[in-house]
Image 1 (spheres, one colour):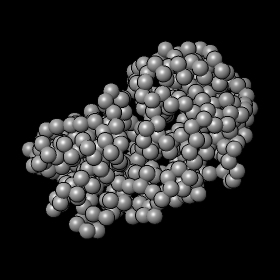
Image 2 (spheres, one colour):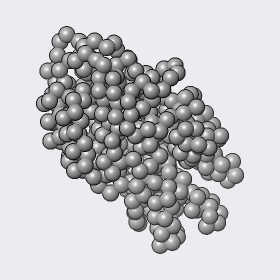
Image 3 (spheres, rainbow, N blue to C red):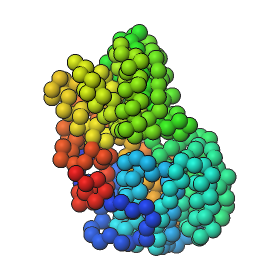
Image 4 (cartoon, helix red, strand yellow):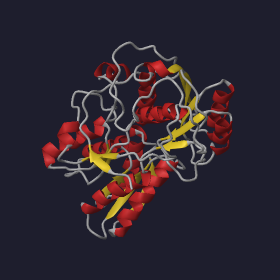
Length: 371
Protein backbone atom coordinates (compact mmCIF):
# COMPACT_ATOMS: atom_id res chain seq x y z
CA UNK A 1 0.00 0.00 0.00
CA UNK A 2 1.23 3.46 -0.72
CA UNK A 3 1.89 5.64 2.31
CA UNK A 4 0.47 9.07 3.05
CA UNK A 5 2.11 12.14 4.54
CA UNK A 6 1.17 15.67 5.53
CA UNK A 7 2.85 18.22 3.30
CA UNK A 8 4.56 21.51 4.05
CA UNK A 9 5.41 23.32 0.85
CA UNK A 10 7.97 26.11 0.55
CA UNK A 11 9.46 27.29 -2.76
CA UNK A 12 6.97 27.56 -5.65
CA UNK A 13 6.97 28.22 -9.38
CA UNK A 14 6.12 27.47 -12.97
CA UNK A 15 6.33 28.56 -16.59
CA UNK A 16 3.87 28.10 -19.48
CA UNK A 17 5.01 26.55 -22.75
CA UNK A 18 3.55 23.73 -24.83
CA UNK A 19 6.27 22.99 -27.38
CA UNK A 20 9.78 23.68 -26.22
CA UNK A 21 13.52 23.23 -26.58
CA UNK A 22 15.62 22.47 -23.49
CA UNK A 23 17.90 24.88 -21.63
CA UNK A 24 15.93 28.05 -22.35
CA UNK A 25 15.45 29.30 -18.77
CA UNK A 26 18.38 30.70 -16.80
CA UNK A 27 18.73 30.39 -13.06
CA UNK A 28 19.59 27.99 -10.27
CA UNK A 29 18.36 24.42 -10.37
CA UNK A 30 15.14 23.93 -8.40
CA UNK A 31 14.87 21.36 -5.61
CA UNK A 32 14.05 17.86 -6.78
CA UNK A 33 10.45 16.71 -6.92
CA UNK A 34 9.41 15.22 -3.57
CA UNK A 35 9.24 11.77 -5.17
CA UNK A 36 12.06 12.16 -7.68
CA UNK A 37 14.93 9.70 -7.90
CA UNK A 38 18.35 11.22 -7.40
CA UNK A 39 20.02 12.79 -10.43
CA UNK A 40 22.55 10.58 -12.16
CA UNK A 41 25.24 11.51 -14.64
CA UNK A 42 25.10 11.73 -18.40
CA UNK A 43 26.72 8.36 -19.14
CA UNK A 44 24.91 5.04 -19.57
CA UNK A 45 25.37 2.07 -17.25
CA UNK A 46 27.26 -0.92 -18.61
CA UNK A 47 24.80 -3.71 -17.87
CA UNK A 48 21.35 -3.64 -19.53
CA UNK A 49 18.28 -4.66 -17.56
CA UNK A 50 16.24 -7.66 -18.66
CA UNK A 51 12.99 -6.03 -17.51
CA UNK A 52 10.39 -5.48 -20.21
CA UNK A 53 9.85 -1.87 -19.13
CA UNK A 54 13.53 -0.86 -19.38
CA UNK A 55 15.06 0.25 -22.68
CA UNK A 56 18.69 -0.57 -23.54
CA UNK A 57 21.20 1.77 -21.81
CA UNK A 58 22.05 4.87 -23.79
CA UNK A 59 24.28 7.86 -23.13
CA UNK A 60 22.75 11.31 -23.07
CA UNK A 61 21.88 13.98 -23.78
CA UNK A 62 18.36 12.84 -24.58
CA UNK A 63 15.42 13.97 -26.68
CA UNK A 64 12.33 13.87 -24.45
CA UNK A 65 8.71 13.96 -25.58
CA UNK A 66 5.69 14.52 -23.36
CA UNK A 67 2.42 13.08 -24.69
CA UNK A 68 -0.21 14.90 -22.65
CA UNK A 69 -3.72 13.45 -22.84
CA UNK A 70 -5.28 16.91 -22.66
CA UNK A 71 -4.38 20.40 -21.50
CA UNK A 72 -7.79 21.70 -20.53
CA UNK A 73 -7.36 22.58 -16.86
CA UNK A 74 -4.88 24.31 -14.58
CA UNK A 75 -3.41 21.02 -13.28
CA UNK A 76 -2.38 19.95 -16.78
CA UNK A 77 -1.09 23.42 -17.64
CA UNK A 78 1.07 23.45 -14.52
CA UNK A 79 2.24 19.91 -15.29
CA UNK A 80 3.55 21.02 -18.70
CA UNK A 81 5.21 23.99 -17.01
CA UNK A 82 6.85 21.73 -14.42
CA UNK A 83 8.17 19.59 -17.29
CA UNK A 84 9.58 22.60 -19.10
CA UNK A 85 11.26 23.95 -16.00
CA UNK A 86 12.84 20.59 -15.12
CA UNK A 87 14.17 20.23 -18.67
CA UNK A 88 15.69 23.70 -18.56
CA UNK A 89 17.12 23.48 -15.04
CA UNK A 90 17.30 20.29 -13.00
CA UNK A 91 17.98 18.02 -16.00
CA UNK A 92 19.56 20.59 -18.32
CA UNK A 93 22.82 18.65 -18.74
CA UNK A 94 21.02 15.42 -19.67
CA UNK A 95 18.51 16.80 -22.21
CA UNK A 96 19.09 18.13 -25.71
CA UNK A 97 15.42 18.75 -26.57
CA UNK A 98 12.06 18.49 -24.83
CA UNK A 99 8.68 18.77 -26.53
CA UNK A 100 5.13 18.53 -25.21
CA UNK A 101 2.03 17.73 -27.27
CA UNK A 102 -1.66 17.69 -26.38
CA UNK A 103 -4.07 14.97 -27.58
CA UNK A 104 -7.23 16.88 -26.63
CA UNK A 105 -8.60 13.74 -24.89
CA UNK A 106 -8.56 11.76 -28.15
CA UNK A 107 -7.06 8.25 -28.05
CA UNK A 108 -6.18 8.10 -31.74
CA UNK A 109 -4.46 11.49 -31.60
CA UNK A 110 -2.31 10.45 -28.66
CA UNK A 111 -1.37 7.19 -30.37
CA UNK A 112 -0.26 9.12 -33.45
CA UNK A 113 1.73 11.55 -31.30
CA UNK A 114 3.55 8.68 -29.59
CA UNK A 115 4.32 7.10 -32.97
CA UNK A 116 5.59 10.46 -34.25
CA UNK A 117 7.97 10.79 -31.31
CA UNK A 118 9.39 7.35 -32.16
CA UNK A 119 9.78 8.23 -35.84
CA UNK A 120 11.50 11.50 -34.93
CA UNK A 121 14.13 9.72 -32.85
CA UNK A 122 13.10 10.64 -29.33
CA UNK A 123 14.89 8.70 -26.59
CA UNK A 124 12.26 9.17 -23.85
CA UNK A 125 8.48 9.44 -24.08
CA UNK A 126 6.49 10.45 -21.02
CA UNK A 127 2.76 9.74 -21.32
CA UNK A 128 -0.17 11.07 -19.30
CA UNK A 129 -2.59 8.70 -21.02
CA UNK A 130 -6.09 9.32 -22.29
CA UNK A 131 -6.98 5.68 -21.57
CA UNK A 132 -5.68 2.75 -19.52
CA UNK A 133 -5.40 0.55 -22.60
CA UNK A 134 -5.81 2.45 -25.89
CA UNK A 135 -2.12 3.40 -26.13
CA UNK A 136 -0.77 -0.08 -25.30
CA UNK A 137 0.22 -1.05 -28.84
CA UNK A 138 1.98 2.28 -29.37
CA UNK A 139 3.80 1.89 -26.04
CA UNK A 140 4.92 -1.62 -27.02
CA UNK A 141 6.15 -0.39 -30.41
CA UNK A 142 8.06 2.49 -28.83
CA UNK A 143 9.76 0.20 -26.34
CA UNK A 144 10.68 -2.25 -29.13
CA UNK A 145 12.26 0.67 -30.98
CA UNK A 146 14.56 1.30 -28.00
CA UNK A 147 12.63 4.23 -26.50
CA UNK A 148 12.26 4.50 -22.74
CA UNK A 149 8.54 4.96 -22.00
CA UNK A 150 7.14 6.15 -18.68
CA UNK A 151 3.44 6.62 -18.04
CA UNK A 152 2.44 8.81 -15.11
CA UNK A 153 -0.59 10.20 -13.31
CA UNK A 154 -2.24 6.78 -13.71
CA UNK A 155 -1.15 3.29 -12.68
CA UNK A 156 -3.65 0.84 -14.15
CA UNK A 157 -2.74 -2.85 -14.24
CA UNK A 158 -4.23 -2.88 -17.74
CA UNK A 159 -1.56 -0.53 -19.12
CA UNK A 160 1.25 -2.09 -21.16
CA UNK A 161 4.08 -3.76 -19.25
CA UNK A 162 6.49 -2.07 -21.67
CA UNK A 163 6.41 1.18 -19.64
CA UNK A 164 7.46 2.23 -16.17
CA UNK A 165 4.28 3.42 -14.44
CA UNK A 166 4.72 6.38 -12.08
CA UNK A 167 1.62 7.34 -10.19
CA UNK A 168 -0.13 7.48 -6.88
CA UNK A 169 -2.63 4.78 -6.04
CA UNK A 170 -5.72 6.56 -7.35
CA UNK A 171 -8.12 4.08 -5.78
CA UNK A 172 -6.47 4.69 -2.42
CA UNK A 173 -6.87 8.43 -2.96
CA UNK A 174 -10.60 7.87 -3.39
CA UNK A 175 -10.66 5.61 -0.34
CA UNK A 176 -8.96 8.19 1.88
CA UNK A 177 -11.33 10.97 0.78
CA UNK A 178 -14.37 8.72 1.06
CA UNK A 179 -13.40 7.60 4.55
CA UNK A 180 -12.94 11.19 5.69
CA UNK A 181 -16.36 12.19 4.29
CA UNK A 182 -18.02 9.17 5.91
CA UNK A 183 -16.49 10.22 9.26
CA UNK A 184 -18.40 13.52 8.99
CA UNK A 185 -21.77 11.84 8.31
CA UNK A 186 -24.10 9.22 9.71
CA UNK A 187 -25.25 5.94 8.21
CA UNK A 188 -28.24 6.61 5.97
CA UNK A 189 -27.19 10.13 5.02
CA UNK A 190 -27.38 11.04 1.34
CA UNK A 191 -24.74 12.74 -0.80
CA UNK A 192 -24.00 13.55 -4.43
CA UNK A 193 -20.83 12.54 -6.27
CA UNK A 194 -18.80 14.97 -8.40
CA UNK A 195 -16.67 12.71 -10.58
CA UNK A 196 -13.84 13.62 -12.97
CA UNK A 197 -13.76 12.78 -16.68
CA UNK A 198 -16.05 10.05 -18.00
CA UNK A 199 -13.96 7.03 -19.03
CA UNK A 200 -10.70 8.41 -17.63
CA UNK A 201 -8.85 5.71 -15.62
CA UNK A 202 -7.90 8.14 -12.83
CA UNK A 203 -11.49 9.25 -12.43
CA UNK A 204 -12.72 5.66 -12.44
CA UNK A 205 -10.20 4.53 -9.83
CA UNK A 206 -10.85 7.47 -7.49
CA UNK A 207 -14.58 6.96 -7.70
CA UNK A 208 -14.25 3.22 -7.12
CA UNK A 209 -12.30 3.75 -3.91
CA UNK A 210 -14.58 6.48 -2.61
CA UNK A 211 -17.83 4.69 -3.41
CA UNK A 212 -16.66 1.53 -1.64
CA UNK A 213 -15.67 3.49 1.48
CA UNK A 214 -18.91 5.46 1.55
CA UNK A 215 -21.12 2.42 0.97
CA UNK A 216 -19.31 0.55 3.73
CA UNK A 217 -20.31 3.36 6.10
CA UNK A 218 -23.95 3.29 4.96
CA UNK A 219 -23.78 6.57 3.02
CA UNK A 220 -26.14 6.74 0.03
CA UNK A 221 -25.05 8.37 -3.24
CA UNK A 222 -28.23 9.69 -4.83
CA UNK A 223 -26.74 11.23 -8.00
CA UNK A 224 -23.45 11.94 -9.72
CA UNK A 225 -22.11 14.14 -12.52
CA UNK A 226 -18.77 14.52 -14.32
CA UNK A 227 -16.84 17.75 -13.77
CA UNK A 228 -13.78 17.26 -16.00
CA UNK A 229 -11.96 18.49 -12.86
CA UNK A 230 -12.84 21.96 -14.09
CA UNK A 231 -14.25 24.79 -11.96
CA UNK A 232 -16.91 26.07 -14.40
CA UNK A 233 -18.09 22.59 -15.37
CA UNK A 234 -18.32 21.56 -11.72
CA UNK A 235 -20.20 24.72 -10.79
CA UNK A 236 -22.89 24.01 -13.37
CA UNK A 237 -23.04 20.31 -12.49
CA UNK A 238 -23.36 20.89 -8.75
CA UNK A 239 -25.98 23.61 -9.17
CA UNK A 240 -28.12 21.10 -11.07
CA UNK A 241 -27.51 18.30 -8.55
CA UNK A 242 -28.28 20.51 -5.55
CA UNK A 243 -31.53 21.72 -7.09
CA UNK A 244 -32.63 18.12 -7.64
CA UNK A 245 -31.44 16.92 -4.20
CA UNK A 246 -31.67 19.84 -1.74
CA UNK A 247 -31.64 17.59 1.35
CA UNK A 248 -28.21 16.01 0.85
CA UNK A 249 -25.88 15.99 3.85
CA UNK A 250 -22.55 16.03 2.05
CA UNK A 251 -20.68 16.01 -1.25
CA UNK A 252 -17.95 13.72 -2.55
CA UNK A 253 -15.62 15.48 -4.96
CA UNK A 254 -12.50 14.16 -6.70
CA UNK A 255 -10.66 17.42 -7.26
CA UNK A 256 -9.81 20.78 -5.76
CA UNK A 257 -11.38 22.91 -8.50
CA UNK A 258 -14.58 20.87 -8.34
CA UNK A 259 -14.69 21.12 -4.55
CA UNK A 260 -14.11 24.88 -4.65
CA UNK A 261 -16.89 25.27 -7.23
CA UNK A 262 -19.34 23.32 -5.05
CA UNK A 263 -18.46 25.41 -2.00
CA UNK A 264 -18.98 28.61 -3.98
CA UNK A 265 -22.39 27.39 -5.13
CA UNK A 266 -23.42 26.62 -1.55
CA UNK A 267 -22.30 30.08 -0.44
CA UNK A 268 -24.00 31.83 -3.36
CA UNK A 269 -27.27 30.06 -2.56
CA UNK A 270 -27.14 31.28 1.01
CA UNK A 271 -26.82 27.91 2.72
CA UNK A 272 -26.34 28.44 6.44
CA UNK A 273 -23.47 25.96 6.54
CA UNK A 274 -21.09 24.52 3.96
CA UNK A 275 -21.73 20.79 3.66
CA UNK A 276 -18.84 18.40 4.33
CA UNK A 277 -16.76 17.94 1.16
CA UNK A 278 -13.20 16.67 0.67
CA UNK A 279 -10.87 18.24 -1.85
CA UNK A 280 -7.43 18.31 -3.37
CA UNK A 281 -4.34 20.44 -2.75
CA UNK A 282 -5.19 23.23 -5.15
CA UNK A 283 -4.49 26.61 -3.64
CA UNK A 284 -7.99 27.84 -4.46
CA UNK A 285 -9.58 25.02 -2.48
CA UNK A 286 -7.21 25.53 0.44
CA UNK A 287 -8.06 29.24 0.51
CA UNK A 288 -11.83 28.72 0.68
CA UNK A 289 -11.32 25.97 3.26
CA UNK A 290 -9.42 28.43 5.43
CA UNK A 291 -11.99 31.17 4.80
CA UNK A 292 -14.97 29.09 5.92
CA UNK A 293 -13.07 27.51 8.77
CA UNK A 294 -12.52 30.97 10.17
CA UNK A 295 -16.12 32.11 9.60
CA UNK A 296 -18.10 28.97 10.47
CA UNK A 297 -15.76 26.20 11.60
CA UNK A 298 -15.80 24.32 8.28
CA UNK A 299 -13.18 21.56 8.13
CA UNK A 300 -12.05 19.34 5.28
CA UNK A 301 -9.43 16.92 4.02
CA UNK A 302 -7.26 17.16 0.92
CA UNK A 303 -4.94 14.79 -0.87
CA UNK A 304 -2.20 16.02 -3.18
CA UNK A 305 -1.66 14.58 -6.63
CA UNK A 306 0.80 17.24 -7.73
CA UNK A 307 1.69 18.20 -11.31
CA UNK A 308 5.35 17.82 -10.34
CA UNK A 309 4.77 14.08 -10.80
CA UNK A 310 5.97 14.64 -14.38
CA UNK A 311 9.39 15.56 -12.96
CA UNK A 312 9.46 12.31 -11.02
CA UNK A 313 8.61 10.45 -14.24
CA UNK A 314 11.39 12.24 -16.11
CA UNK A 315 13.91 11.33 -13.42
CA UNK A 316 12.97 7.66 -13.59
CA UNK A 317 13.23 7.69 -17.39
CA UNK A 318 16.71 9.20 -17.38
CA UNK A 319 17.80 6.81 -14.65
CA UNK A 320 16.49 3.84 -16.64
CA UNK A 321 18.54 4.78 -19.71
CA UNK A 322 21.55 4.97 -17.41
CA UNK A 323 20.97 1.46 -16.07
CA UNK A 324 18.75 1.95 -13.00
CA UNK A 325 15.66 -0.27 -12.86
CA UNK A 326 13.14 1.13 -10.33
CA UNK A 327 10.66 -1.69 -10.92
CA UNK A 328 7.64 -1.30 -13.12
CA UNK A 329 5.55 0.66 -10.61
CA UNK A 330 7.70 2.57 -8.09
CA UNK A 331 5.88 3.43 -4.87
CA UNK A 332 4.75 7.06 -4.73
CA UNK A 333 3.58 8.71 -1.52
CA UNK A 334 0.13 10.29 -1.24
CA UNK A 335 0.59 13.65 0.51
CA UNK A 336 -2.42 14.79 2.57
CA UNK A 337 -3.56 18.00 4.23
CA UNK A 338 -5.74 18.07 7.35
CA UNK A 339 -7.09 20.89 9.46
CA UNK A 340 -3.93 20.69 11.58
CA UNK A 341 -1.64 21.29 8.58
CA UNK A 342 -3.80 23.63 6.48
CA UNK A 343 -2.11 26.84 7.64
CA UNK A 344 1.31 25.47 6.66
CA UNK A 345 0.20 24.82 3.10
CA UNK A 346 -2.31 27.46 1.96
CA UNK A 347 -0.83 30.40 0.02
CA UNK A 348 -3.25 33.33 0.56
CA UNK A 349 -1.44 35.70 -1.82
CA UNK A 350 -0.93 33.22 -4.68
CA UNK A 351 -3.33 32.34 -7.51
CA UNK A 352 -6.16 29.90 -6.87
CA UNK A 353 -4.91 27.88 -9.85
CA UNK A 354 -1.67 26.72 -8.21
CA UNK A 355 -1.37 23.02 -7.30
CA UNK A 356 0.79 21.90 -4.39
CA UNK A 357 3.46 20.79 -3.81
CA UNK A 358 5.59 22.14 -6.66
CA UNK A 359 9.30 22.19 -7.44
CA UNK A 360 9.16 25.63 -9.06
CA UNK A 361 10.16 29.12 -7.87
CA UNK A 362 7.71 31.93 -7.10
CA UNK A 363 8.72 34.06 -10.08
CA UNK A 364 7.44 31.42 -12.49
CA UNK A 365 4.02 31.19 -10.83
CA UNK A 366 3.21 34.70 -11.95
CA UNK A 367 4.04 33.81 -15.55
CA UNK A 368 1.54 30.95 -15.64
CA UNK A 369 -1.02 32.06 -13.05
CA UNK A 370 -0.94 35.88 -12.72
CA UNK A 371 -2.55 36.91 -9.44
